[in-house]
Image (tube, rainbow, N blue to C red):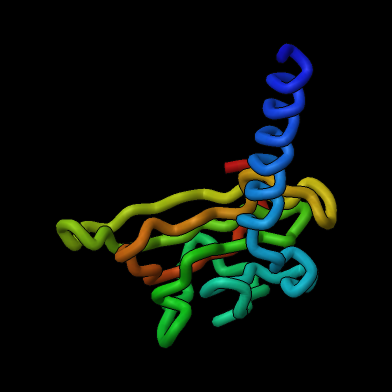
Length: 128
């Protein structure tokens, strides 16, 4: 009985672990250094690399509705401006530099459904 419970727990843990591995989109290899990429699913909808901070580059087209933003720049922060779907007000986030190629961290940001990205500003600063 005890072995059956342990075997069941191990099986459940394996299934849960596989769900987390499969659930993360495979986009890390598609956004080249030194870009900031906008994604819908695993499809890049836009790439930016010019340092413009404190001025924002306006985001247009399908990139406005991106579900994920990734910063591959290792020394630069990225400021993202977006519009909240609920009330139309503006919000801002600052994404730190990518620590190293292929790693996962704060430099990947998942947008809330319905919010619209309106601008990006890449800064040569290494901290937010």
